[in-house]
Length: 325
Image 1 (cartoon, rainbow, N blue to C red):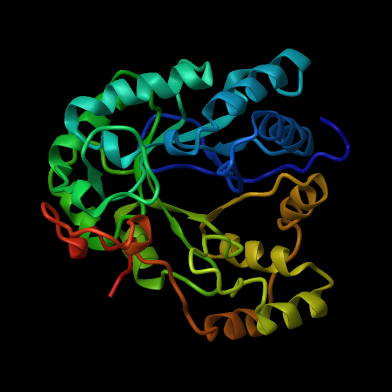
Image 2 (image 1 turned 60 degrees about the vertical axis):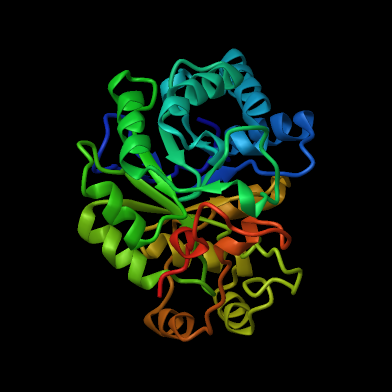
């Protein structure tokens, strides 16, 4: 191991048959997709100590991530495929029972892998099959067959091509529908979470059910309204960062880690990638935690997935909502 490489703690997943999940992951969503940029950033991240990489069929980044993993193996940066934890996701247009398994097989082909460590349902939203379009058309939303889709997710797990299975953007209500019929419960629920959207109710529920929470947009990047970044603009976090001698991003990521949640943080800048790993050898104080708990909350809703035009003709937006009441 390189002297500059950070040893990242791991968390055992309660459900599934895979390896433990490294306690921080690198996100790869980037629009437009520049394959070389993603491949090079992932390789740089591997050199620094990252072993957990998050992609999705919708992102279009599965091929460059797969190329980077293959190159890391070739260069000896990792000794085996088993050292790397790869997550990908089932997009809304494939959320039909007969499309789940073919979709994962396509993702595996894109990634040049025989299995993924974690396969997630990307949203509690089902769209008519067809090319992925963002934002989606309202009239393309159809009722979600939770039982049928989850049964096929379990088949992916049974076949060994998804070592663990889970969900993303699911509320407690959506999780209840899965758990009512699941043989293999979701191992993970990946949701937006950061100091300005703390997901307290959902985290408490997931803890009760043995579902590990991972956090996307841990630095507040999922901002579809263009109104600035409430995390990076937070005066509370800036004050704590100054007092601790840390960056604001490190404070936000450390707070997430201290909640028992795994942050999935996206940066293609090597210096920031390195800083984002430097969160495991210090702690926030009780006073820091109290101040962060009092930050006003803001969140993204499911409506952001859809265009403003058109009508929901087959599905109800309320059934797809991702914000806990």
